[in-house]
Length: 416
Image (tube, rainbow, N blue to C red):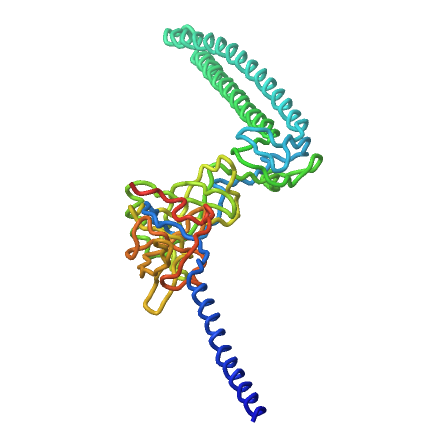
């Protein structure tokens, strides 16, 4: 009996131990769940702001030189000197190449000698004219006297005819002499014209820059022979100002033409990692490309810092206007749910959701893409940009520092 009592007590103790173990485990799970519910979730958030946001058309553009010239020699000859360096910026009228002048100078001297020779011939012809004019005057006077004497019967008619013929012959000689003078004068004019052409060719021995721009690769070296209007010596590109060509959808053409009629539209162009350059729309093509449904436009940029380079591709934004007082948040804060788009808000240290209407997105020149909100939030609402996946409605949150680059509308104009 004593042994049976001890066994009963042992069973009761074991049963009590088994009952206490689940109760202890449940207490620990409840405590852990309670601790989890009060733990603050780390998130990043930024305030929604009301700002003036540009209404723009984005495109990819290609930079083109406003003017391009292939420099060629206007005379044949040997290159004596290259007066510039490849890649150098040159100004209009600056010496680029020097061509041998000796042959042209010899031609100029020959033509000058021809002028002097023909001038001497002209002087000689004028002297002959003066001499024959005096003889013709004397002969004409004698013929007049002979006619009168013949009328009176003093001299025979044959003698009168001889005197009149001599007068006519002298007059014809004067006319011939005058023609010789005119021929000599014409020869001098022709010589002077040839001399002027040779002197022009002499000036062409100095090949100068026809425009201001940047020189490309030199295609000939000193000592090379060139022919007139044949080999391209160097190509010059005008870099300032400069064009950017880009295309826009044909659906936007009417609005662009309407707005551009009131004043040139602003166009901004940028490359990766560089600030945007600002220019103005200068050209709208006269036809739409049926293959792409786009129309070609050109914008002119001052490009005084040579930031835009011919041939490179740039990001283009054609500004149509400014939308006033738009609600702007980072695009990364927009979430997609079964009922549409929404954002997480932080109010009094807890998380909540708010449905929103996104009108469009906008990418500023610097910083992340921004979403323009129609309805759903108001200025100053703290919108979560990172950490949304761990949030539940009513969860406690701890705000982390937000980098300046992630703040909304960093390049928009704040609305007053």
